[in-house]
Image (cartoon, rainbow, N blue to C red; front, side, top):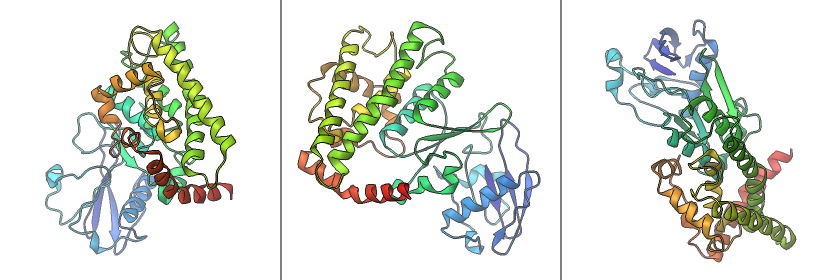
Length: 351
C-alpha cells in the first residue's frame, strides 16, 4: 500500500492485482483520519504504520519532506506524477512501486533464525518477489497485537499474501508456509514433486520429520547448551543425543540417494526445511559435523546455490556458519549474553 501526504490532503493507493484506485485521505493538524472511503481498515493501518515509524502516536508537520519505507528506499522518481506535492510519506506493505507490472503480494515477517530462513530460501529458489519485514525479537515485537493478528502464536516466520480475489491470506508455521508456496507457485516443481507421487510423500515425510523432530530437538539442545541458567546435564544430554541420532538418520538417507538430495533427483522443500538447522549444529551442542560426512557435503553443496546464498542472508547476514568456527567458550559466552532475553520471554509467555 502506498500513501502520499501533504499538509491538507493525501492520496492512498491500495494495490490489488492491477487495480490501483486512488482514494483521498483527509489530513488535519496531527492526525490522518480514518476517512478512507470503502477502505477504513487500510487507512487505520497506514496511520499506525507511519506513527510507528516516527515512534509517535500522532503525525505532525515534521512528516514533511521526509521519506519512510519498510524494506527499501524509494526515489522521488517513482512518484513523478505527484512531484507537485511538497511532501509525501511512503508506506509499503504489498509492492515496492505503484508502477510495478507484477505487484509483490507476499510479505515475509522474519529474523535470521533457522525457521524463517527456510522461507526466504524457498522464495529465492522459486524466483518470487517478496517484501521483508524484520521482526525485532529482542524487543518482543512478535508479541505485539498487530503481529498477533497475523500469527496468533506470536512466532516467526509468517507471511501475508493476497489471493486471486484480493483477499488477505495470513499463513504461519514454517512447514505450512513451505507447503503453501509450492502448492500455489511451484507449478513446474522446481522445489517439489507432483502431488500424489512417491517422491511427494517422501518429501512430505521429511518435512514433517524436520518440523516435529529435528527442529524441536535441536532447539532444546540449543537452549540447554547456550541459554539456560544453571547446569542441566540430563536435559542437555537428552537433546544433544537425540539431535545426533537424527543427524545419523539424515546422513544415511543422503548416502543412499545418488542424487545427493534427500528425496528424488532434485532439490525440494525437504532439503530447504532442514538446511538452516544443520548450519547451526555447533550452536546446538554438536561439537563438529565431520561424523556426518554426507550431511556435511550436502550442506556445503546447497550453499553454492544462488537461491541459498541469497536466501540465507535475509533479513541480515547469516551468522551460523561463522559461529561454528568459535570455540566452546566463545559460544557459551555468546549464549549467556542472550539468556536474559530468553528468561524474560519465558516469563512473559507464562503470564
